[in-house]
Each structure stands twice: as C-alpha cells, then as structure tokens.
Length: 56
Image 1 (cartoon, one colour):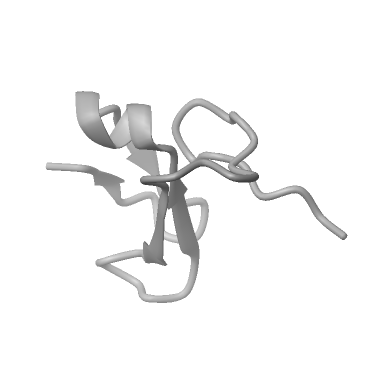
Image 2 (cartoon, one colour; image 1 turned 90 degrees about the vertical axis):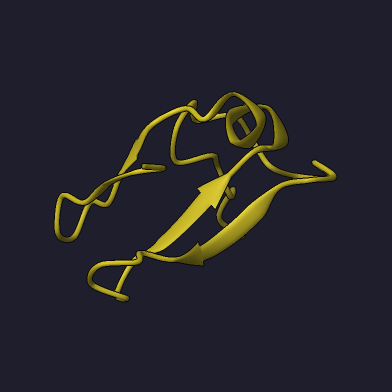
C-alpha cells in the first residue's frame, strides 16, 4: 500500500485529522493532498501534472 504524503511538506498523512485531498483546481487530473499544518499556514503546493501553484 502506497504512503499518502502532503503535497507541500511531504509529511505522511496517516491519521492526520484536518488533512484534505482534492483534485487540482486547474487540470482536475492530479490529487493534491494537504496536512492540517500546511493548510493552516497556507503553504504552497504545485500540481505535478500542469504546474498549477496554490493555495492562492
């Protein structure tokens, strides 16, 4: 079973309450995964498929 990791900090998301996963808002192809901490501080992530950078 593959380990699910945060798209921003690469932390394992096993049992991380407050974590989120969603499709890239631009291409809708890749799943973006975010730990609670990175969501709270607004850490940047980049879609490996299309290069979209969020959260803003």
